[in-house]
Image (cartoon, rainbow, N blue to C red; front, side, top):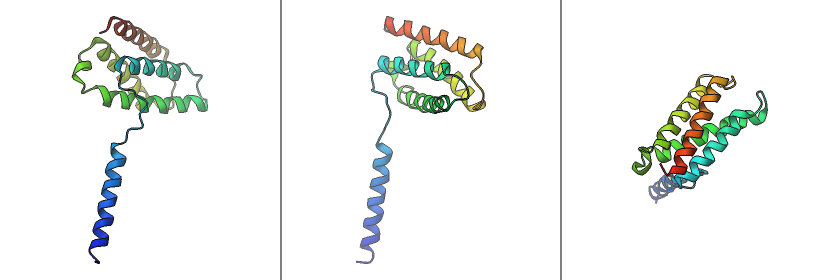
Length: 131
């Protein structure tokens, strides 16, 4: 009996940890076009907010999280990985994530904002074409 209780407790802990790892509280729906457009809108909002505000920091943290969720969900999806909209979106996401990682306390430079907005437009056009 003394061996039984610790083993059951260990089994329960493994199950709980395993199930917690399987849950995905992501806001992504699984529809590539819808998720991409929602991500673009979220990132545009995060980029355009005034600097040095609490909402800007929260928006940047949310942007980092959704970038990670988006990349991990779609990067290995063969039906999406070779689409022009996805490759352009990955380029934009890598640029923005790189800026947030390297310069977390600095605002996004105008040159980068301009390039991101251009890439976002290209992605929206490609999505309308179905690519």
